[in-house]
Length: 328
Ligand code: NAX
Image (cartoon, rainbow, N blue to C red; front, side):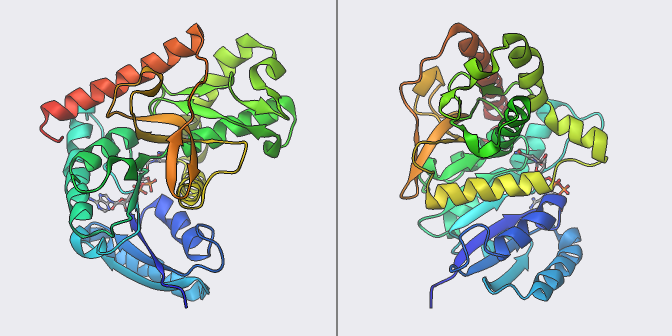
C-alpha cells in the first residue's frame, strides 16, 4: 500500500476550507490512487465547528482519505506534512489600515513558517491562499530558514483561471483552447493579467481579441476586481472557486504542468523580468518533477512593463512595511 501524502490545511473550518477539504479528500489533488491524510489547523474557538466538518468528511467515506487530525497547535498539526495549504488569515476589519492588516497576519504567518521549519517533511511545499497572500508567503518563507525558498508560493491561480474564463467568454471558445495565460505581480487589484503572451487555438490572444480598448478597460479590471464582484453578488467572498484554484495550484506543482502550456504562480523572484530578487511575485511558470521554473525570454512591451512595474512596486512597499514591523 502507498504511504499517504500528508496535507495540512489552515483555516480549515472557514468557507474555503469547507470546499477545499472535500476536493482533496475525494482525490482531486493527487488522483484516485494516492491516499491522503488531512492535518487541519484552526484557532481554538473554531475547533468545534471543525469537528463538525470532520464528521461530514467521515460521512463521505472517501476511499482516498486515509486519516484526519485536527488541532490548534501548528507544531503538532504540521508534523511531517508534505504539503501545507495556508488558507486561514486575518481579514481586514472595519477601520483597519493596511499596516494593521500586515501586522495581524504577520502574527499568524511568522509562527506558522517557524513551525513548518521545525516539523514539516523535508519535501514540504507551502501554498499561501490567505490574504494578503504574496506578503504572507514572504513572511512565512523568511521565518523558515531551513526550507528552500522555492518551496513557498502564493495563490494567483484563481486570477489566472478568471482570466481564462473571461477570454473564453469574449471569444466564444472553450477554455481548453486557451493556453499560456499569465498573471504578473501581486494578488491584488494591481495584478496584471497578460493577453500578449496567451494563445487561443495556437494564435496570439491579444491579436485574436483585436480590441485594445476591451483589453485595457474591460478585461484587466474585470479580472482584477472579480473578487469584489463576487462579494457584491453573493454576499460572501469567493470560496468554491478559490478552493478549486488552490487544488489546481498544488496539483500542478506536485504533478507538473502540461507540455506546451504554463500556469501562473506567485514564487520567490530570482530577478527575472526585472522583479527584485526575493519578492514573492506572480510569474508564468512550468513545473517538472515537482520543481517550478519561471518561463524565460518573453518580450515585454511598454504597456506590459508599466503594468508589471506598478504591481511589483506594491509588493516592494508591502515588503518594506513588514520589514519595518520586524516580521522578516
Ligand atoms: P473564512 O473567514 O471563512 O475562514 C478563515 C478561517 O481561518 C476561519 O475559520 C478562522 O478561524 C481561521 N483562522 C484564522 N486565523 C487562523 C490561524 N492563526 N490558524 C488557523 N486558522 C486560522 O475565510 P475564507 O473565505 O475561507 O478565506 C480565507 C482566506 O483566503 C482569506 O484571507 C481570504 O482573503 C483569502 N482568499 C484568497 C484568495 C486568493 O486567490 N489568493 C481568493 C479567495 C479568498 O479571498
